Amino acid sequence: MTTSSSADRPVLILYVGGTLGMVASPRGLTAGDNMDSRLRSALATLPPTRQAHLPAFVVEEADKPIDSSAATASDWQRLGHTIAKALPDYAGVVVLHGTDTLAWTAASLAYQFQGLDRPVIVTGAMLPLEAPDSDALANVELALHFATEPRLQEVAVAFADKLFRGVCTRKLHSEAADAFASPNYPLLGERVGDDTVLYPARGLEAQQRGAPRFELPDYAPLAAGGVARIVLWPGIQAWQLAAWLEDDRVQGALLEVWGGGNVPEDPALLGMLAKATGEGKLLAAISQCTQGSVAIGQYAAGQGLAEAGVLSGDGMTPEAVLTKLVHLLAQPMDDRERRRRFLTPLVGER
Ligand code: ASP
Image (tube, rainbow, N blue to C red):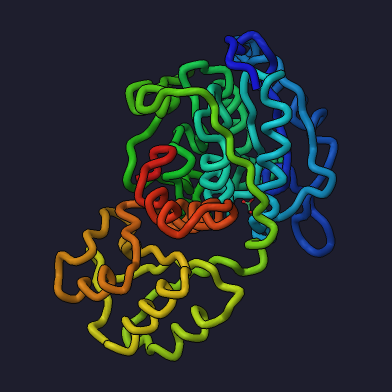
């Protein structure tokens, strides 16, 4: 891809599915089409001064837009390829995505687009574009503004007047328009009155330099359950862990443990984790707490995790850890390098 200035090019809007473009059907909301004309009609209802500030854009729709609850790692890969191919011709890209797994897609795209030199903004809406009091139009307008901001050189999520680092974002509310947050990283930007404000010192552009080094590995072999997400509960047993980890199809797992990085001091349970890492499975732990980090080994109750070879996910989100495990496991590298790269911040995720 080119690294020349691109701010004078149009923005590409890609509709891959989700409530924003959905229409009513006898079975409930389902993905609609005609997004180009529907978006232009909606944007034409903005006050003229705000319309005048919109960038030129081109709209493309996925062949089969989906409800994002059906997305898999193969969808992340397909989207990554589509964007990478289109990127040189556009100032930036806006992905219109279902909110349910929007944060997972944003995190995955961040790993695929390391060294990105322009904005890729993911957004969606809690209500369809044409619904009364919909948040869709405001989210699209916000995303379009940030998609032409040359100082924004990363994957970000624009939602409810806020701009988040994509790989740090989570959906935390199932109904409110203000559904997203990045619990361990400050906003990259926000709407203030009629203006959008970017905080460039918080952006990846200021934190990492270098030429684009996109990695677009084949996620398909991992898309059918290759990485598991295991959330601890009081009383979890080794046999229950074994049901996940002893399956050959599982190559890695995200463990969501207690507080600052604790697990029960149960030799059978810890033995099961050690056996899995000994077999080359990539295991990483984060806290079940939404905010804060893990410091594995700070308590005796966490020492076993370190001894079992479980990697610390620090303050990463579940979305950021699981998509990073997929990304690393999809590439030909030895276990040592994979573990080293997991512990290295690649795109500001830790
Ligand atoms: N189920 C929808 C989806 O994620 C929800 C939404 O878009 O808000 O596609």
